[in-house]
Length: 87
Image (cartoon, rainbow, N blue to C red; front, top):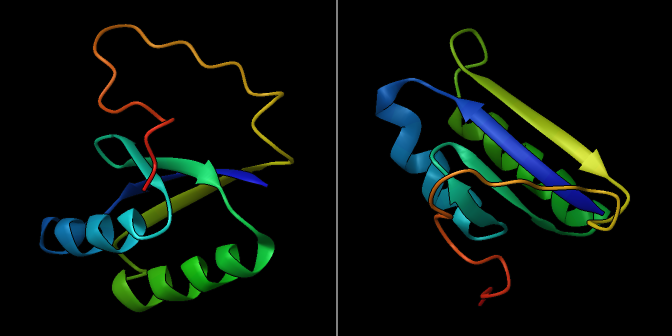
């Protein structure tokens, strides 16, 4: 499945959530990660996010697509990273 994760968290947690998500997904823009992962990895990510954020203050949205193919992406301006360069 292809997921896009967008977050709006308190300043003191931004670095922690960013570092956590970089382990699993591609950073594409401030507070936006995306990539191809399996169902088990998505569940692991959700558990990790819940351990980092304050659910009363922070917000995380996860958009799930069956794969990247139906996704049409348009970028205006500078692309932060190339999605093909995943380690």
